[in-house]
Length: 127
Image (cartoon, rainbow, N blue to C red; front, side):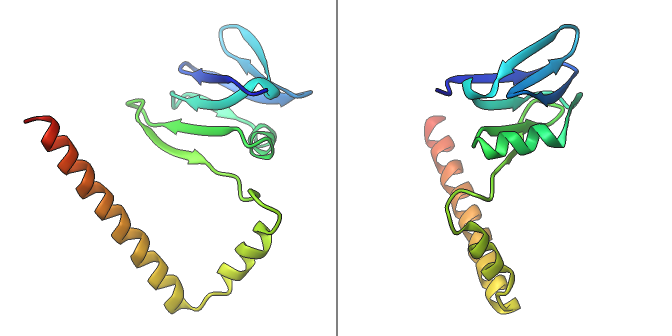
């Protein structure tokens, strides 16, 4: 059962060993991956191994990365969420340039729409 959110906020090296995430910093700690729901990397002084990232993805453990101001900037998203994900990715790679452009335009348009909605909500909260 996954229930634990692990936050790494100081310099550390994270690696994978025998179903555990090993955190090497001032002290060495281990967290069993079956207990983890999410990993939040809140420091830019953290290094991770590819083996750990791969295992976190396999187990669908969300990983969020923060910038130097500790603001979330990206997350690790696994490709394999369903049985035919590989097929979907291959099909998208074969899309025509026009189709790719149309999809990109829709994505950017929706992001702008969402930002506008957020600005409206913020301005109404300040009233």
